Amino acid sequence: MFRNAARALGVAGLVVVSVLGAAAGAMADGAGPAPSGSPSAAVRLEYYVPGNRLLVAGDQIGFAVEGMAPGWDRVRVTSPALQAPVRLAPVKRGARESMELDGATAPRIRPGLRAGTYPFTATSHGRTVATLRLKVASEDTAEIYRFVVGPTNAHPGSDTPASVRPGTDVRVLLTDLRPASEDALTVRSPIFSDPVTITTGSTDDPGCKCDDPGTVYAGHARVRADVPEGRYTVTVVSHHGRQTTRQHVTVSGEPVGHGPSWTAVGAVAAAGAALAAGVAIAVRRRS
Image (cartoon, rainbow, N blue to C red):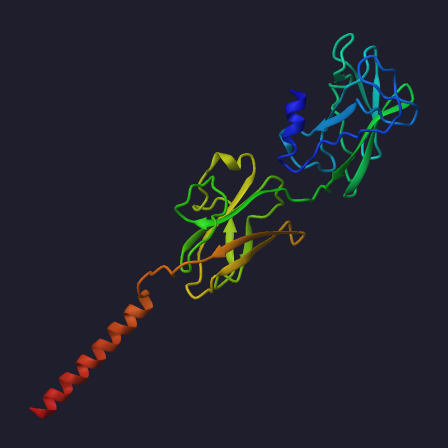
């Protein structure tokens, strides 16, 4: 199960790293521990974050070591990014897979840690058996799950379509798994005549389960009917100006016709009334 959870991290952009050392003489089953200071080619240090989310300062994190030689008894995982070392032991006597001895107090990345890449080292009896390096984001980092611009009648779980036609009514959705205290965000793009406001609790939110457990910002707009065909950037700034998220939309095809606006209809009606009045006056004068 741990292996599956670790693999899933690759989808979220967190890659499980196995450092395969170049220790001479490293062998498979029955081999002794690797030389001091060299990771073993057969050992893998894996990790997972609950929910397969972005690794952020203050988060819980789990570890496992696989491929240890039979008879191993303990491994210690250390890092300048950890609040405290993590102790691992075999899941059962003679097993290569591990379990955490401190499961009741899940290890944490240090709160307030600066964003960066940090080393993690697994040692057994003073010997390095595996290492990895992980990117850690700061606590105020957004985690944008999806940013979608598409027709209002598109399936709520679908991603941005290959293209939209000029004049199309579109729905704009952004889901943030780590939102800041913001109720509204502003979206800008050359495909819109004006900035578009997306809000929480919007009626444009399709209520898709794919957005759980994030915060959804939604709104709608109309693509300019005169926008030339091409690929355009859509940008939203969140987290009080600290996070910029971009999406790309292709505009192609014939413009969508929406008929004359109410303003145009009113203007035509007023012009018609004025013309009719003028004709009536002219007729009366002739009479």
